[in-house]
Image 1 (spheres, rainbow, N blue to C red):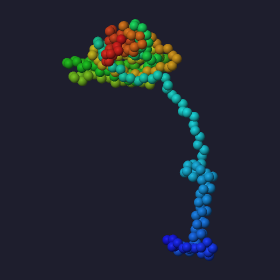
Image 2: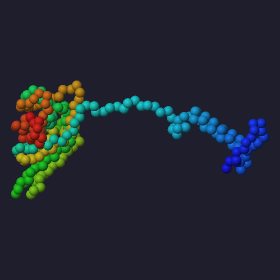
Image 3: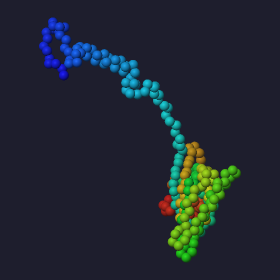
Image 4: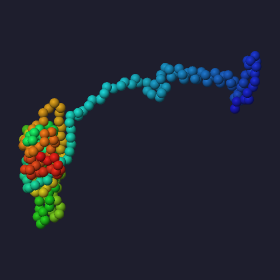
Length: 249
């Protein structure tokens, strides 16, 4: 506790020494506090980073990070219906032709330059008193790259539809991006009424030319975007029509 204030004339200030209970003069305590304050201020000036609780290392600003993947990319699941029984070999040209841009009333260009298959799912309608079977194989091969050569099959029973869900193995052609060509993406056998889901990924590079559609368009409007079956044929003659009825060609 501080002592009560004392009124002292200017000529007598040196004659009085105010002390606390501990015996230390107030002037000595004040001197210690002033010295500590000065030391703290000097430390802050010498090392402002440490005064803020940061490390003493010099922090540099990195260059902007690299950018990967500025090419056009699109991943989508397209659904199709089998009009009739099918035993079909599907090429990468067929898959790229599923999404088109019309250049004239009868000609079109693929929207993308390359495609890969992530997964194929097929459901076959059950047959009352019988059975319906489906089969799928990622049969595309090239020297040194043949995939697992597995054939995926299933058969319906009773009211249970047949169902296949298959992904291409790591070394199958369909597992990596391919340009428009006659190379085989997969081989499908299924009955009429089957539903087919194709999970596809597309890419396009800038300053590269997209392939023209293998088969002619019918009554298209130049500049419009269209869907068609994954057998590469116009909707009117396709065995695998897109589920989405608008924009078919």
